[in-house]
Amino acid sequence: MPQPWANSGVDLHLDLDPADGRRTGLERALRDAIRTGRLTPGARLPATRALALELGLARNTVAAAYDQLVAEGYLTARRGSGTQVAPLTHTTTPPTPTDHHPPRPTHDLTPGNPHATAFPTTDWLRATRRALTTAPTHTHGDPRGRPELRTALAHHLGRTRGVQATPEHIVITSGYTQALSLLAHVLPGPIAMENPGLPFHRDIVTRAGRPVLPLPVDELGARTPPDHATAAIVTPAHQYPTGVPLHPTRRHALTTWARTTGALLVENDYDGEFRYDRHPLGAVQGTAPHHVAYAGSASTTLGPAIRLGWLVLPPHWIDPVVDAKLHTDHHTETLGQLALADLITTHAYDRHIRACRLRYRRRRDLLLQRLHHHTPHGIPAGLHLLLHVPDENAVLTRAAHHGLRLGALREHWHAPGPTSRQGIVIGYATPAEHTYRAAIDALHHTLGNPTP
Image 1 (cartoon, rainbow, N blue to C red):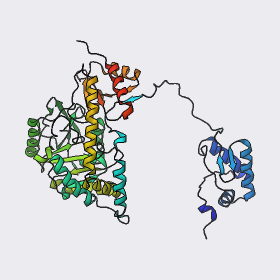
Image 2: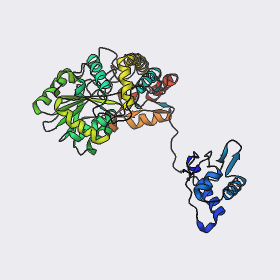
Image 3: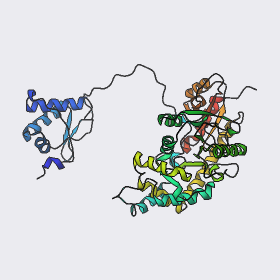
Image 4: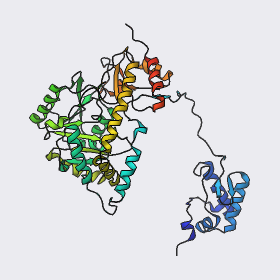
C-alpha cells in the first residue's frame, strides 16, 4: 500500500545527523537548507505528518521543529497556506564582486533576432490545437520529419524561393544549428566557410572534426572555394555579416565548382524571405539541385524559440544525413512540426511573413534616414546592415555611453589582423516598437556626422 507522504505533493531531501538527536538534527538540517539557499524564500515544506512518515520520526517531533524555526524567523505558518520558508531569511549570499561592470544597455541593436512581439500567437495557438488532435504520442517519429511538414515545405519553398524539392528530399532538423552539425559529421573533409562569417558556425564545424578553410567575401559575395574543399557553406541572398548578395557570376562559378569537383555547396538561406527593394533572389539550389544542399529555419521568420529547420538534400546525401539524425536525437519533436505545417498550408505563414516584411522595411527606412551621412552596406534585404568605421573600439565605447549595444565586425573574421576592415553590424529587428526610435536616436548620437 503506498505511503501517504508519497502523494503529499512536496519532496524534500534532508541530511540528518544521528548525533544531534531527532528534533535537534531536523532543526539543524532545515536551517542549513535555508541558509545555503537550497530552500528558497516562499518554498513550501511538506506537512508534518508526511515528513514524519518519510523520515521515520514522530509527528510531534516534526511539529516541534517547525514551531522552533517559525519562532526564529526561518519559517512562516498560516492556516490554509501550510508551512513555508520566510521571505527574509538568514541565508548566505555570495560576496559582492569588486569589479565594476557597466550597466545593462537600454537599447539593443545587435543582429540575429527577429522582433519578439511579431510572433503570430493567435495563428500558432490555432494550429497547435489542431495538431493536438492528430499528433501521435505513442511512437517515435520518422528521423526525416513529419510527412505533413515536408510536403508543406516542398510546395512553399518551390513557390517562394524557387527550390526544387519533393518531400523525400527534405529532412527536418532542430534548427539550422543541428542542420549544420549533421552535415559537418557526414562530410568527409575540409569545409570552406565565408570570411567574414558567424564564428559560432565555424565552431560547429571544427567540433565535428572538420578543418575550416576561409572563403573570402568581397563586394560580389563569396569567391570560388579551393578544389580540395569537400563542401562550401555560403549565404547567397544576404551574406552575413557584410549583407552583400551573391553576384550572378559568382552563383554560376560556385555551382560549376560543385559540379566539377563533386563537392557539396550548402546554401544557408537564413533571411531570404526579407527583401525590400526588388523581387527576392531565387535560391541557388534551384539551378543545381543535385549539387546544392538548401538549409532554412523558422528562427528568423517566427523566432529562435521555434526549434525547427530543414535541409533540402541532393539524393546521394539523404541517407547519410538521415542516419546521422537518427543517432543524434532520433527525431525532431512532433507537435511543432504539425503546427508549422498547418501554418504553411493555411497560408497563415505567408501572411505573417508579408506583415513582417512591411514592418522591417519601415524600420530599415527609419534607420537609413538617421544614417543619411553614412554609407551602410547590405540594405536591400535582411534584418541587419553593416557600417564600416575606422575604429570599432571607439564606436562601441561611445555606444555603451549612450546605453546602446551593437555588433562588431571583428568578431566575424577567421583570423583578425591589422588589415581586416573594421565595422559595426546593426540589427534593426529586436527593439520593441515603442523604443525603436529612441534606439536609432542613440545610434545617431553615437556615430555623429562623418568627417568630410
